[in-house]
Image 1 (cartoon, rainbow, N blue to C red):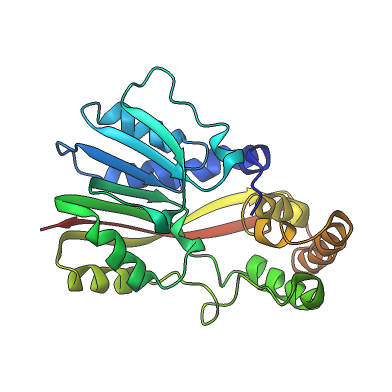
Image 2: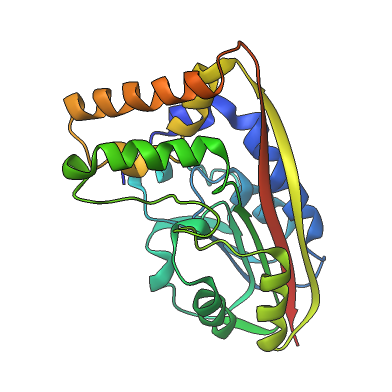
Length: 256
């Protein structure tokens, strides 16, 4: 996928609020090695390095475009590397991931893999969007169906019973308990943002949900896809104001 940092950051403030909540859930412990999985442009990674100055902090992301904006200046304990989350190696005292794991399948198995790389006493802290049943994603799935041939049958987002790998807070807590976790916190929270009509919803999704589709389409097909999606959004939200109730799941757990 081809990510555009400028588009992603058009809603920087709204996207930063869940990060602050996730950081607040992390206990102050003597971490030695910290990794931020899917770090993007690295702002949360910097916060981790500034907070845990005795730790070596690694920001890992697959996108060269996003990492091109990551800044480790002034923080000798911080570095960024390009890499796949599933290719992570080594042991860590804190594994952090904000709005990245939703792109990966089979979260029960994924948690098991991450747990193996968490040292005893270490903390796992994760936030994932859980808006896959929202009309914005439902209409995106419908549009993808219209462009099935151009997309090669690809569809990333479905209904709550469909393609999304994101679990409920209870399911994450139960899986973490199976792994032997202690001090588990798992919650769902709505982070509303007010957008200027259907065009505002389109602009919001350009930074995330639209990315895997437009990355698979040429310029012409991408324009047609976007226009078809916007037509559906306008039918759903014909007014000038959309209260976009964005739901996210946050959880932390400590390895005993």
